[in-house]
Image 1 (cartoon, rainbow over the protein chains, first blue to last red):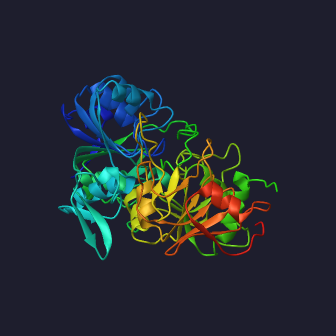
Image 2: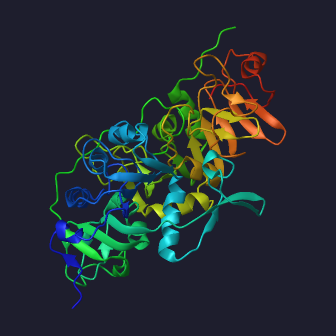
Image 3: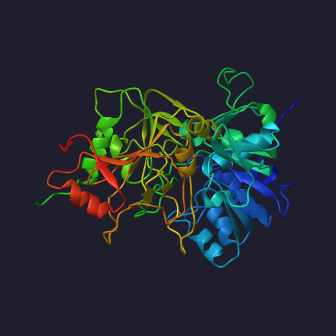
Amino acid sequence: MIDKISPSVEVALADVRDGATILVGGFGGSGVPEELIDALIAQGARDLTIVNNNAGNGEVGIAALFKAGRIRKLICSYPRQIDSHHFQAAYRAGKVELELVPQGTLSERMRAAGAGIGAFYTPTGYGTDLAKGKETRVIDGKGHVLEYPLHGDIALVKAERGDRWGNLVYRKSARNYGPTMASAATVAIAQVYEVVELGALDPEVIVTPGIYVTRVVKVARKQARIPAGGVTRGVTGRAAA
Amino acid sequence: MSYAKLSRDEIAKRIALDIPEGSYVNLGIGMPTLVGNHLPKDREIFLHSENGILGMGPAPAPGEEDADLINAGKEPVTLLTGGAYFHHTDSFAMMRGGHLDIAVLGAFQVSVSGDLANWHSGGDAIPAVGGAMDLAAGAKSVWVMMEHLTKEGRSKIVDRCSYPLTGIAVVKRIYTDLAVIDVTARGLVASRVVPGLAFEELQRLTVVPLSLSGTRAAA
C-alpha cells in the first residue's frame, strides 16, 4: 500500500542536506508552509538556496532562516517589503546572494523544470537590466529573452487537504506557487490541514495530482493571521509584490 | 489663469470610466489600486490579481478578512460571485499570453516612445521587480497612472528614461494629474487637460513635444 503521509514535519524533512535548493511556496503571508519552514530551521541544514516570491517577513519563517544565517542565496521577485529586514541586513552585509527574477519568469522557470522543457523564450524583461547577459531573439517582431528551468531539490508547499496518494487541493489565493513548485522539485513535501481518505477529493477538482508529491504531513490549523500591508509604502512605481 | 491638479481619486475616476464593460484588468500596486473604487457599478469588469484571482472584489468588511484571500499588495480582498482561483503560472500565462485587456501601472518615468520605468529607483535601493515586467510585456494595453511632475517639478514624461526600464515601447496611455496623454506613432497627444491650464503651459511643463487633441472638458 502506498502511503505518502509522514507522521511529522520532522520526519518529512529529515533528509534535507546542506547546500540544497528549496522551493518555498507562498505569496506574502498566504500559502506559506510555516510549519515546514519551522521544521527546516530546527533540522539545521545550512548553505541553502531558497526560491520564494518574497524575502521573508517579520521574525518567522524565511526571515528566521535569514536571521539564523542559513541561506546562501535567494532567488525571488520581490524582496523589498517593509518587514523583510533580516534579508535586507544579510544582503547589505554581503552574506547572501540575490538573484532577482520577474515574477512570471520565476514561476515559468519552475514550470519548465517540472515539465521537462530545456529552456524558453519570454518577452518579459527584454531590453531591461534583468535580461543583461542573457541570450535574446526576436520572434514575430517581438524581443524575447532565453530563460532556463529552475529545479528544486526540495519543495515545501502548503495545501488545504491531501490524501495518502499525495493528491492535493488548496484554498483560495493560498494556492499561488504550490502546484508549480510541487512539480519542479525532486522531493515535494506538502503540509495540509486535513488528510482525507482516497476518493474523498473529487477527481474533477484535484489541483495537484499525487505524482508530483513525495510526502504529505498534517499540521494543526492556526488562527488565521492577516499580515499588515506588506509592500513598501511611498514607492510610486508599480512595485508588484 | 489658475488651475487645480486632479487628486489621485479624480485620476482614478477618469481611468475607471474609460474601462469598457467586459474588460479583464490588472490594477498595479499603489495609486492604480484606487481605480477599483471608482469602477461604474453598472459595468461588469473582471479584475485580475497576479497571485491567482479573476473576479476580485472589494475589501471585506472589518472582521471578514481571510488570510488566504489577498491581492497583489497583500491586502485582504473578496471574490465576486463567478470569480475563480488559479495558480501562479497560469496567472502569468494570462498576462504574457495577451489575455489581459488593460494593466494600469504606476511609473517613475514614461518616454515619448512608451518606454516604462517603474521597478527600480536605482542607486542604493534593494531591487524588486515583482510582476511589473510581465504586465508590461503582456497586457494588450498598458495605461500609466502617475503625477505629471516630480516633487522637484520635472516632467516624468521624458525623451529617454533615466531610471532602469521595465519594458520597451509598452505604454499606450498616460493619465496624470494634469491631462491624459496618448502615446501614438505620431508622438504624444494630449487631451482632457485640466480646466484653466493652457496647452502651451502644459507643453512648457512637459518639455518633450506634445500635440493637442480632443476636448478640454474635465472628466
